[in-house]
Length: 110
Image (tube, rainbow, N blue to C red):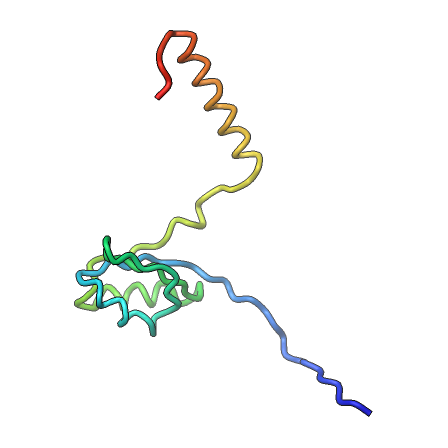
């Protein structure tokens, strides 16, 4: 007779949002670990991309703006990007038409 594990808890994936935190000093990125999950850090440009739960975004942005080591906090525009196949096809068709018009006028493509 074996044991059967039954997981009765409800598993769900929480909605996540990303924010961009601009810093005065690159070494201050370590102070941001308890705010969320750091997914990218740019030492050259001194910014960090952090993933947070969607319901905590406003509260975290307000608390980060009060920190002395933070230059600026902004929401990521990742949710506003359109990666659908229809949009890409329309975009490529528009580029093709623009290129043909430029070639008809004798202009060079750069």
